[in-house]
Amino acid sequence: MSKDNLSFSDEYLFQPHAIEVMNYRELLYNKFARNMTSLLESKRPRKYSSTRGLLDSRRLYRYKMDDNVFYKKTSQPTSDTTFIFLIDNSGSMSHRDWTETDGYGNPSRIEKANAIVSAFAKANKTVLGNKIKMEVFAKSESGHTFDSFVRGRVPILSRVFSNVKGDTNFDKILNIQCSSPVVSEGRATGSLTPEFLLLPTLMNWCKSNITTKNMVVINLTDGDIVYNFSKKNNGSSAWHSSATNNDTKRLRIKYLRGIPNTTVFLGSSQDSYTENNLKDIYGTNAVSASDENFETEFFKVINNLINTYA
Image 1 (cartoon, rainbow, N blue to C red):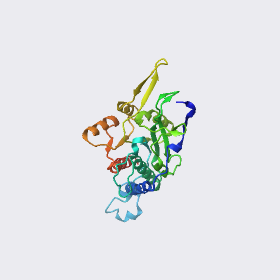
Image 2 (cartoon, rainbow, N blue to C red):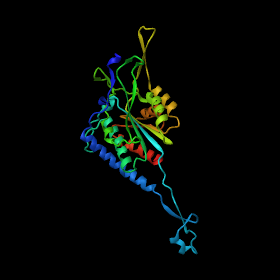
Image 3 (cartoon, rainbow, N blue to C red):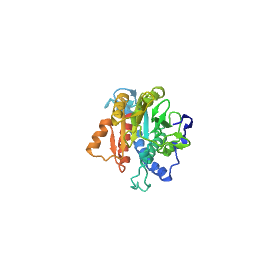
Image 4 (tube, rainbow, N blue to C red):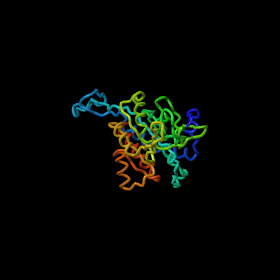
């Protein structure tokens, strides 16, 4: 590949979303908003009677019969967590199952992932006032083979949304498409699945940019790792080596140890073998979801995370 013809462009990372995708996002947003409102109400500071604390003048008349004439207030916990979403925007995420989604068309896997993350971002802003810090990345891998400072295909991590830096355009998340931002000779170069080959880059970025006490990594993907290395032996013919799911497992153990994380695997057959295999690769918190029940499974995951860390 000629180095002179290589460039990067957001034009190939985003494309305008269909109105059905926006409507689907609004359906999901309403569900998130209701859940977050209930959560906010349950954690609201409350006043209760006590035998110690601040004197409650309105209860003094009862002091001969009841020594609960003081009061205390529960404190309102504050979120000190950053949610990091990793959206697989490889070509296979364009798959559609052609099952109607409550009258909102037939969203592809990437559209479902985009809509639900965008819905979370919108509800987080409108209901929680962005108390949950949020970063959204698209992970891709150019189908083009590099033959310069690196050899082989290159995983790419694209930061597409951050409420930490004041980004309020959660509609932009809806526009992520199945393409890497790498351009060769004016053409898109496709997008394969890098999976956790990007974790070293992500963790290095987090060291300099995450300021909260905790962070949670939420990986949305539908495919096995696709990655090839190439190297020339003494200037002669090249040999090739491919990364595997075992590399994904090793990278997860090395870089996500002690960090709350989960993977929601889209398009899974959900049989016991697949379920056990996914948990071995992505950890015991991994969740397999079919194209039909992805929304349901994701809500279970995200609501549990909100209740734990929000």
